[in-house]
Image 1 (spheres, rainbow, N blue to C red):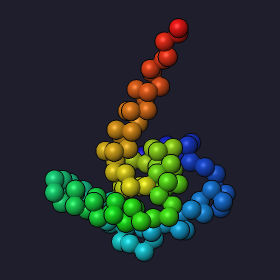
Image 2 (image 1 turned 45 degrees about the horizontal axis):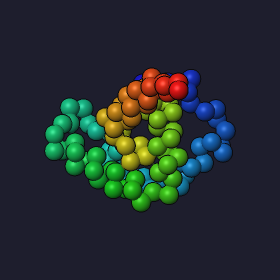
Image 3 (image 1 turned 30 degrees about the horizontal axis):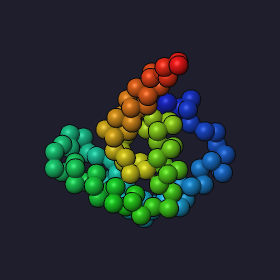
Length: 102
């Protein structure tokens, strides 16, 4: 579940980018996998969703939103659930690396 405390308030300016998303004209089932979907079916669906994201004018805003609120499901900003989890792990690892004092 998304962490509600991380969601921005109901200010239209913060959400306006969503009105420009390329996904608005697409079937939302393309971006969210059905229960139990695995293997090639899931990869193909994810790739089709990511192809729509690739031409989206607000891909960066979408990606930043998904990472900031830890969207748990679907393709957001061209990233799958697994790719976002890998990014969280990468960021945690980078935060632990401290510069060595000279």
